[in-house]
Image (cartoon, rainbow, N blue to C red; front, side, top):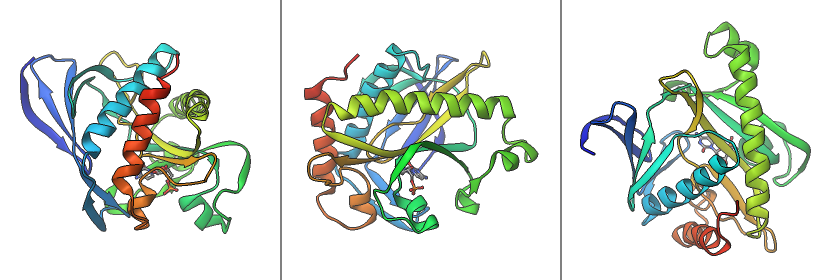
Length: 240
Ligand code: C5P
């Protein structure tokens, strides 16, 4: 497999074309940003941890019927993935109120939600990724109502599978963000990453935060939290 030109550089990853027409190579970085790039830093070892963790979770999801872009881990920080055209929506699922939802609605972080909820954010750095309704998505032609329904169902299925997985590891999955894309054949695939950068993980016993909020909120112990999440996944095994 030959790695060709870089086609994209995001905040946490670079994406390269390869000599295989259907595959991209993703290289995870240690760079960390928060608040739409206003806060910047480095989390040592993050690239490797997020690569490993995403790949374990993508394989677990694939085994359980959630099609996704994972093909093969090629090095500590690099993974071969199916080439997709990313749908410009961040799909957030929440089991407890936290972060922007808690702030927007004046809720105490950790407030129980009667059922998981799905939110859509329009991926646009210049606008700061605004929350959008299904009507916004339709009239702005960001995605069709059928695709939005599909994204919602897939996101809730991912939530069901991940909640069970993390519960076994003593972790409450508070919320997370997913991205999806269209493969060459028109199939919608789960893409991007699933890691402490994109999820809120709280230790069930102590409530300790084991995710990027430690970086966002200057709580210290950032690297240790990322390492602990990977350790639990590896020792608990990504259960099938
Ligand atoms: O900030 P907010 O509460 O809306 O984030 C909800 C979830 O989505 C969190 O787990 C956060 O890590 C994730 N997220 C993300 N990328 C963004 C925005 C949120 O991974 N750009």
